[in-house]
Amino acid sequence: MTDLPLTRRAAFAVAAGAALAAGAPAAAATSPAGPSRPFLRRFALGSFEVSTITDGFMMNDAGPHPTFGENQSAEAVAALAAENLLPADRAASMFTVTMVNTGADVVLFDAGNGAGRRPGAGLLRERLAASGIAPEAVTVVVVTHFHPDHIGGLMEGGAPAFPNARYVTGRAEWDFMTGPDAPERLRELIAANVTPLAAKFGFVEPGQTAVAGIEAVDASGHTPGHMAWHVESEGARLLVTADTVNHFVFSLQRPDWHVRFDMDKEKAAATRRRILGMLAADRIPFVGYHMPPPAVGFVEAAGDTFRYVPETYQLGV
Ligand SMILES: [Zn+2]
Figure: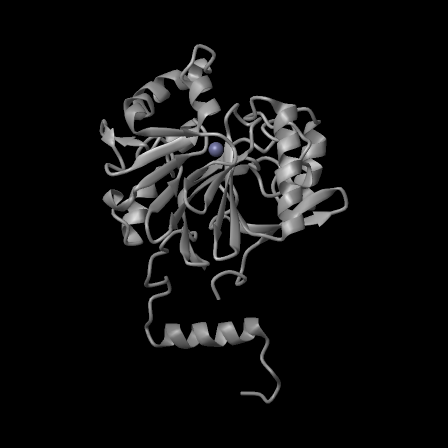
């Protein structure tokens, strides 16, 4: 041996030589377990307990354009992606449901994609169970809007996935989505998953509550009756923004860019600016359905636009 410090490479060679000399197998003895991602975050909000549970994470073969920046060039979207260390030729779809235990109610915001409907998603019910919540324990399901990734999990095997729940949604959403102008592509799923539950639905306008402390906020534009929800307990506040923002970079840094999923592009952009401005000014946390799991964060104002700040240890410490 020498007194000179070993380089890492040299140290590895020495170690490997020693292992071979001892007759150890050259290959690793343990197979890779595969990638994993966080799917549960739980924290206190006043006397409420909030959980965020990820229903799924899917990588898409297509890049973010034209879903994001539909009215922008592919180059502009690729440049913003690169600036943020994101690929321009791949994008992830991420789905995270919020659950609030108020002590009196267990309130779920949306129901995920539904089991088996899409690869890599529809995991809400099994993950709820893993976090100790039986489907029967859910007393209220708030449906923010009637897109498939939010209503797909309302029914499982032809029966209500949350059998003891009542349901709350915006009156405008119900009226539009169950009416003659509902998008053709949504009709079958709405007929299968929403209208069978009609008798258990209650309808609200912005400013009305689902339960005490949980109040509807107008977030229309994404769909005609899309709602965000303001949650408050003992002065602690949180906004469940649903699909007001759909991407942690594109939606926050370029809130005016058109998004393919938004039914009314300009109204959705105005809603994004209003709600992001409020989150930045009030410095309160939000849960975004399509933010990176566990999907809890803050909004920082940056010039006339915004940046996403993932929550780390600000809540429930
Ligand atoms: Zn969505």
